[in-house]
Image (cartoon, rainbow, N blue to C red; front, side, top):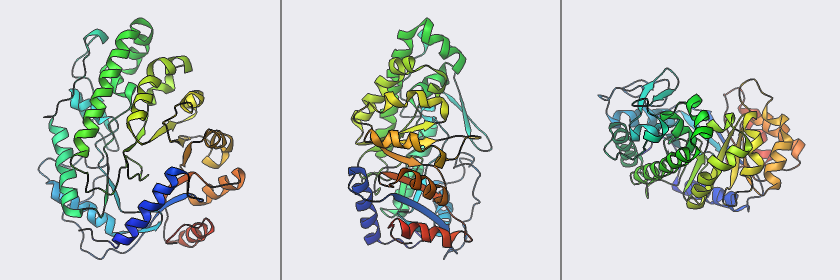
Amino acid sequence: MMSTDFSSDRWAETKANYDAWWRGALKRPLLHVVAPRTPARKPARIPQVNKGITSYDYAVTPEDIIDCWDYNLASMEFLGDAFPYQWVDFGPGVGAVFSGARPEPGLDTVWFHPPAELEAKDVHLAFNAKDRVLARIAAIMQAAAKRWGNTVQIGMTDIGGNLDLVSTFRPSEKLLFDLYDCPDEVKRITWEAHDLWWKTFDHLNHFCQPTNPGYTAWRPLLSTKPSYMLQCDFCYMISPEQFDEFVKPELAATCKRLVNPFYHLDGPGQIPHLDSLLTIPELKGVQWVPGAGQKPSDEWPELFRKIRAAGKLAEVICDLPTFDRLVSKLGTAEGLFCYTWVSRDDLPVARAILKKYGAPYA
């Protein structure tokens, strides 16, 4: 079991609130706020690594990794709509590894390289259920489910976006030329990436469900029905017409198979694709990430208005005071989600904002 205090009754309340938000029935925002607390258990035997769990040697057992995470969770207080959550992080786009790509862990991320330099016509993606990294992820998820049962939400690893996976095998500048030189080959590989993605998603969920309280990816946006934070960072470099031709068809197909799909809109370079994204009927919402060096989230009210006017939900990446300023410009906080951490010094302000928006456990 988990070493922190989060009762089954609170889990039931939390899931009900998230379900209501997805349906558009929650008349307030979801505010997932985590604060520090003094843990009521001894520190873990192994230290925390900088980035997820990719830096752990394979000699470190999944059980020891889970115990390290358990200590971290015991050091957290869950305010508002927050809940115990742990993301299984093996780097952005690790799904490429399950088709032969080579991972290169760094200090704060993981890079993926093609197994060989091939022309587009020679690239073929296929899911390898016996991959060593996949087995490691599955073993960690299995150990988490055994240790915590239904008391901690286990987040799906970052499988990757459609053309992001393709670009691992045809590094970005080559893939950009491929869009013009061999568009049919790009489309073929993209649908192979679609098949790879879904086989990965289904395979790993086998080790989490039905014990897991719900579905999450790399953000703690809980859904009791199949959900994922979809993305395509590659589309920063392409035109809206190319987005509609090469990205949107696969994205729309995945949205149809999920119940509560969200899209990771990363930076101003993706804004030209927003109008097209918002026409996907099954897409439930958009996460807006302004990016480094850009205006903070509260200075993008028109973008959030557009998302909400299209009937979509929205995630705001910011702290609580910034969220409060954004809402003052929008005039409503309904349909918004915000996940943030607060320090002990900032707790009084955080609690006041949580109470202002009617969030529980302030």
